[in-house]
Image 1 (cartoon, protein in one colour):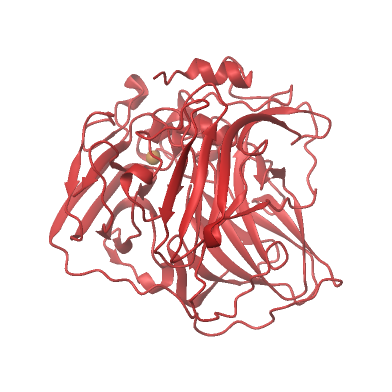
Image 2 (image 1 turned 60 degrees about the vertical axis):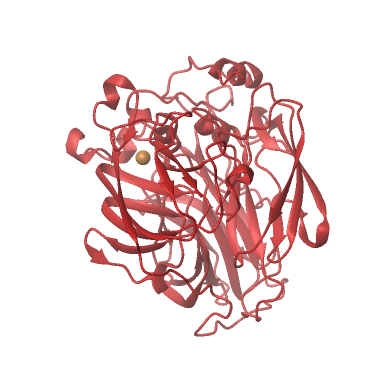
Amino acid sequence: MQFTRRNFIKATGASVFLPAIVGRAFAAEAGAPLPIPEVMDLGKGNMGELTAQLGRHEFLQGKSTQTAGYSQSYLGPLIRMNRGETANVRLDNTIEEPISVHWHGLHIEGYLDGGPHTPVLSNTPREAALDIEQPASTLWYHSHIMERTGAHVWYGLAGMLWIDDPDAADNGLPETYGEDDLPIVVQDRIFGNDGELVYTPRGPSLMMGYRGSEILVNGAIRPEASVPAGLVRLRILNGSNARIYHFGFEDGRSFHQVGSDGGLLPAPAAMNRLTLSPAERAEIIVDFSDGANVRLMSAEDGNAMGGMMGGMGGGMMGGGNAPVADPSGGFEVMSFSVNQGLTAKVTTLADTIAGAPVPEFGEPVRRRSFRLQMMGSMMSGSMKINGVEMKMDVINEQVRQGDTEIWEVSADEMQHPFHVHGTSFQVLSHRGVAVDSAQIGLKDVVLVNGKAEILVKFDRLADANAPYMYHCHILEHEDAGMMGQFTVA
Ligand SMILES: [Cu+2]
């Protein structure tokens, strides 16, 4: 099986030789209506079909861009699955290279997880039956092929996945899809003068992770959502390869976080700033009852190799690509316009949230350490965990099913979002300070700055033919080798 870069490049028509810093000879128009993805409902025995395909998509007015997507030109449908049921989906691939469908955040066995050992080969469909036994949550899916994940996701092989719990008590949260319950997939991209996507990670843009100068939400440039004058639930996924967002509304209004990676929080957490690193999710409730239109902004990503680069800004080092700064200092992500013609179905938020998962971790029986390392990668192009880079035929760790462990993850050179397959974990501490899990909920990605301790437990099996992965979710770091494999037996 060939995992060559050339296949994909040839297939998409994109050139690897475009310069990484691209002038903007076109006007990127913001303000198109927020695209609401089609729903693929896999509840109640419905069979879905997800086909990886190349396509063309109009991001820029009058320009057609080569892309990839699952059953559509860019990104994929919003997939919904029910807790307590088996979700059936047929996976196919019409692209000339292997892709995969990794179910990010699903607690399923290794052979179903969609990692690099279980690709969907060209024109070789297969079926997956996924037993859903986890709480209601906002997850996603994306391609996860050795050394190719960054390119695959950049061109569009990603989508959102929502788990619903038909038996959960009514939590009173907004739940009318596309009206007051909105999927928000935030990505940054670079477009060349010809309107094509540019993906050329090397040098600084590989080291810092590949960041873009245009912000897309659900595949549209800084779109506008029309919302009712009440409470609106935004299910935000940072679907970017490398960029960390520090979200906030332009008028400084506060909002409530009600969910994170692994499900709902026990109680709404008030805030006016929200940081999401790549692959993290947050469900937030925003009050639009004052009728005012408002923009969602983000502060620039400052994640950089402070130690080596003397603290140069991440925007400068992220391949030279940063969104145009607003006078307020940050940059615009999208905007909201209040439509008085829409009915506000939810206007109050309860003090506690019914149906939040209750963490069930026993006493830890083992401790493992994972050091995420970049040192030397500028020369070698390879990044490591505990001194070794990812190798498909090496199992780095063996875990016993049902054991609770403490994993100590350290990131000294820059911040890395650490993701673990097959489970949700609890963050115990960060930089030596205890973390209140009720505030942040169950996680499958934690942004590590210094050292974090997480409590993990695996209930599903993964053998050496299809092991689980742990890795940095800056996709250029993952593709450069900052990933490891483990079995659960
Ligand atoms: Cu990293």
